[in-house]
Image 1 (cartoon, rainbow, N blue to C red):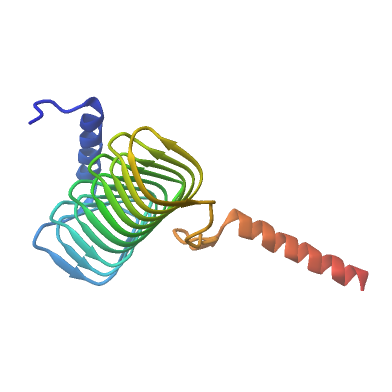
Image 2 (tube, rainbow, N blue to C red):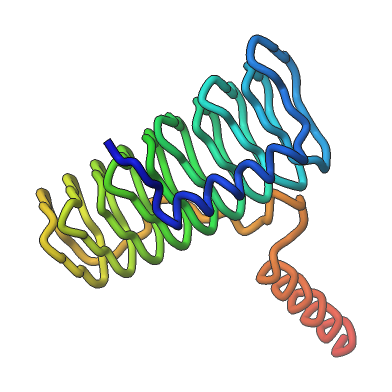
Length: 223
């Protein structure tokens, strides 16, 4: 049994406490049926049957459950989520369980994910477990990853375990266990072109729309 927490763990605990102190709290034993929309940080220790869309942080405690989609800047979960998560950063803490689909920039896993993950960077810590399809630019596995994997760089730490079909450009195995087939990189999951957090077109779409408008204008002038 550890008597002292690492500096990283102390920092994470302090950060979560600061978030909780300024959040709207849904206490344990409280059940809400319906969607939640707002700008405040929300801390959930109760049960939510519905979707959550906030322009801030969503924290789900160990006793918290969300059966619905979550859209936020950042999601920190120690509880249970059954639904699609769209955010910039996602932290799946121990003993959290997340099911369905994740669209994020950065995902760190210390608990369990079952479903699809699409992100820029996926980090699976020693006690973390991901089962399903994972697509990212970079995946670091110190825990377990089972299913289909597509990424530019797949890195396996000594405690890491990967089993399934891997479609990768580069592999860096630092002593982990890898079972399954390896092939050339290919896309497994569709990457949305709309920034669904703001419901606005992405920069790429805006450029395409501008280009199409200019082309139409030039065609009219030629006529």
